[in-house]
Image (cartoon, rainbow over all chains, first blue to last red):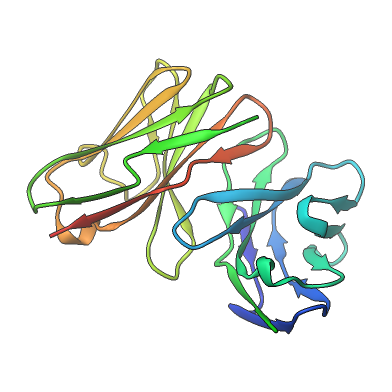
Length: 113
Length: 114
């Protein structure tokens, strides 16, 4: 079975500060890992994904994430937060070659001016 | 590319009625579509997986007779909530996969059952 744990249901940062959203996964098989963003009353938009190529993955809007097998982590970062980054972020895992996603509980990012 | 639409975006219905939600892949053929529900302040929970032309596979605890899923073509899947009750009120989101490893999500449908 696969699972995802997102540490911190709410994260607050100042505009221009580093964004760090934590994600740890559990998987008995090599995983594919994803980060999605959801704005209020909207669907999910893919930020980036890890599918066993480079461990440092760059996504849209300046976000990146690093797959660390030894730590079973896939934390999301952005060097400088922007007000428009305020949203809810979901980490998800699937099996390699599979397509069924298991989501974490989500982290709401608040950006203060 | 990879745009998924849902219709309607919002629906309010009376208890006991049925509601149909459509999910369309606009610019690609979706071999597999997924239906999720999301309660307020919670994550997405997979309800079922549907492959074009075959019966949907429901997750444990999801009533297949209550949540009817049809995937009649490579660009359209429908979810019908039958005999809806207030506890069915939720945000329903579909996603579509084109055979690769990425799912593309629709904008969601807010269902309110009075």
